[in-house]
Image 1 (tube, rainbow, N blue to C red):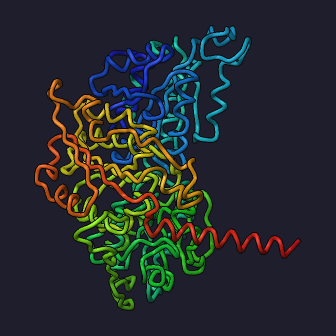
Image 2: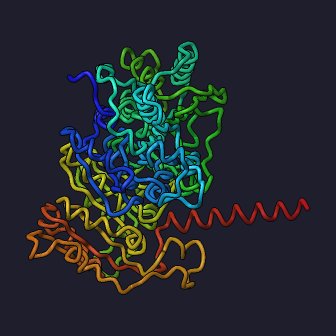
Image 3: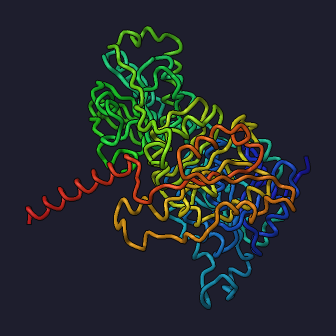
Length: 583
């Protein structure tokens, strides 16, 4: 190895060290010198998207499948600000992101020249750095050559430990600055550890003691379980204890739903019959990686009391009401599993009350007629195969797919907490890239409404450009049905253009005879037409990109959507009445 290495290559070698093989983004004049350094590295490939928002979504989707923070490169001001919504979503849902931003040269910044992408004379060129403060864990502006390497390492390590976005700002003139290459011989410190072993010991012991004394324990594996690398330990805990185990709308698929110990999706009052009463009657709930947002708790109708709960979160642990701040769940969960692997019988895990496994009801067994929300999502669930990646858009899909039984080894991506419509179209690109790198055996299946699609449709051109072959279900229900359910079912603000021809979409974006790129599109208005497509062998093989457009009534909603809307309305009305009475 040479004695020195350019700053740009040092940075990207650290990105590659996490297991990344691609970097997403959009070129701009302030990041071109940096991108030149990326193109000198055989271990990383550039994947340019149609715009920065979609690039952020793609980076997010890639990180969720790879299980490590991924890298996004944008340019100064117009690029970085365009990406902010996507970065904020990654922050809210702990997707993990390293946002690398090209900036003006140091001497230009010092002179405060009125460059393009600034806003007024004499402006501080770091003004945009402050704008990103609420949506990042940490950041660095690489101006001091003596500390550049250390700062790069510090920030990337924080990205891994926190799974929150971080920012690295790169002035135009520093991409080629030579750094000590020997530092790369020391790997990044990416293992999550807790600073106080005595506190960790106390939590582990208290948890194991609670497991031993509980008569009807349960496990609730929430979404931060997988975001922070705890999926395998949660599944081991389930299999070792044989406790009934539940997921949430955000964490669906985190544990194997074909397991005899999986007992349903818990979403407060917005759960299938029997699920809420089963978990809420448990005398111990081990709640791993929680996100207690409205849409992940049935509109805040979760009813599990602290005295019956052990919470293993990313920034604290809590045992039956006693809270331990600043403790990460991952080392704790790992140690609990290791103790049970040594001697599960010691903790009396097999001498608990018997419990009845719950099976999800079949909501609609139609064989003909119009396609209803109560039919389609469980039918798509039966269409899925082990190893598939499924992306459910913020809309009817994210409220419908929780009804669907999943086969094993499903990668499930939804953005139920941040809920930025159009997210999954960009995220699907990242998921396709990650699936190819990991050599996953399954297909990539995108479920998106026609309204959401209009936000980010450009990336379908990227699927085709880069040779990806997802199956795209376009749910055409004539506007924003999720918003109609909330307010204004007949208001025109919930309308979108219905002049788009989705049957010609793939051809327009490049999959046509002249390019030699195969594709196929289907339109389904009845159950019979949909069944014909879902049972078609060629459609199932997914040897080429395909669209299945499904037409549905604009006022037909998944039961979970209208139930949560009604729950929220009732809670708001009660709160308003209480406020009025207090006046």
